[in-house]
Length: 175
Length: 178
Image 1: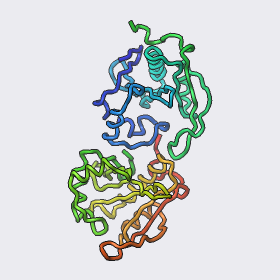
Image 2: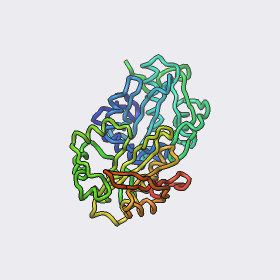
Image 3: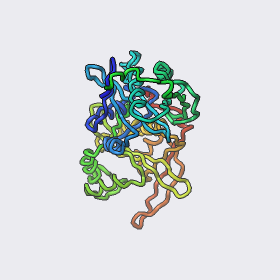
Image 4: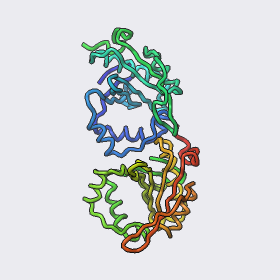
């Protein structure tokens, strides 16, 4: 488990899939930028069983253990990308920013990479602000990168480089 | 789960095979327009594993959770036209004529146009199935033509219906997707 000040990141186990399924099939949890997908338990299990070391799923938990969202990383071609979702009732409290900072610390501490990126929708201002607070820089716009809610949408490309990150902000006690 | 006003669509899980099997092997459920084929559990499981049609099955559930039918989408494969997205449905005889299937079809169409970059959704129904014709027409489909075919020596024609994205315009039921 990766411990922060107000949240912890805990890896998703197979038994946790029912909660993820519940969140992802109910748009009142995540909101307008998550894709509208209806996947069965079997499909989720297949995805989970085929995860490689480059793709990891974590729960964002409050200190009392309540799961309030998910965060993870995956490969976008040769580049490492992160994503983060919070249930609607726990937004605007700084949890997303801290979760992302923990994830970035973790990635730069455990891997030989130069860059971590994220791609929020151009209309997802809240997500863009969170990334900026976590030290990411907006590089540009990926036009018509995904189909969601009946139309093709643009994403903003954000990234943070190792030399900008410099050192862990939250995962400081890693000895 | 996709929520409508009077019905919800819930993705089928492995455990649901039992109920689906019961329905599919019951001529009273299948009625006069669907095939009379009897399925073993093994056959149905196998069909789910190797699936060139990319079927996705949903239960049609009333708000109280009772399962009253199924609706699924799949691809009709054509050599040059590629994948044509199609839907099919069936309801328990006792729950017909109440508007549930029309709403389920509208929910499915909303979901498909919102989640996939397709411009067309089609359905094929047996001629004579007036109830199904009404469901599709109320859900905004247009009859394109007749597929003339023989089944076991006799003429059994079917109607081809479709709805295009520009006719659908926007979701009718799945409006609260934020």
